[in-house]
Length: 91
Image (cartoon, rainbow, N blue to C red; front, side):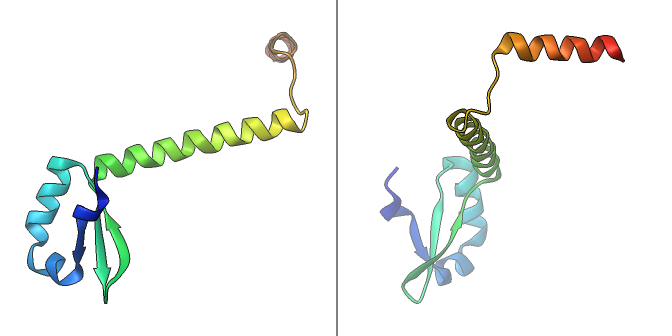
């Protein structure tokens, strides 16, 4: 995707809103909106947005896991499973 072809001024958004929304859903490419020559907003279709949010959540989980490994805050899987089984037996 070439982002430079997906940059439009806010006046274009105002004049072509319905067309822009239709194209966002069809092509699934973000659109950069400028105001006074500066990029101010990015528009994208809802499916792409949701996919981006899910990806970000997974990346955060991975980063947290990596940090825990670096800090030595990990246990062998067998120990963790044993502990869980003991908890379940105590309930």
